[in-house]
Image (tube, rainbow, N blue to C red; front, side):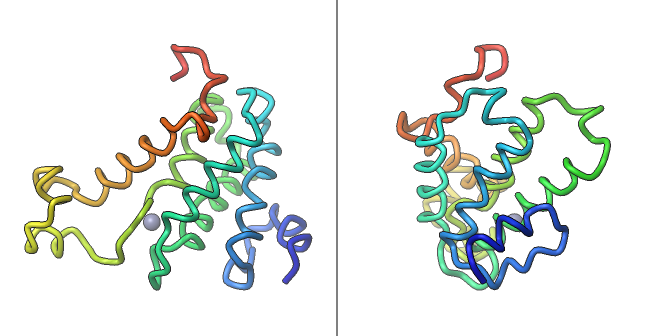
Length: 163
Ligand SMILES: [Zn+2]
């Protein structure tokens, strides 16, 4: 399946994610943010966005489920819900941006094992987060870490109140 057909099918709630490679899926992300008006609204630097998406993609391990295709799937479902429902009457632009970026980063660097595994192993990640929502805290920590890199800082156009 070509890159063009991925972008053409982006407004469909049946997008065959598994038929596309990572690069093709990555290229759809700026298109979704553009169509939601977020690039213009928050003056998102496209080079930084490209860098962030590539960094996130590189941190997604090639595990059976919690991989880049999965996080793209969740982000795309958010896109479809935002585009096809009246949800924008209830959410502001910061909420929409948070939803989209949160979806992309919600399983960041997932190792393919669950919280119980890390807890029983007394793994440093479990100790770091006191056995509480170990992976959930880890994904959030990793996303914050990547966003804090100046090369990835797509939030620089937000006002202090919006941040
Ligand atoms: Zn997930």
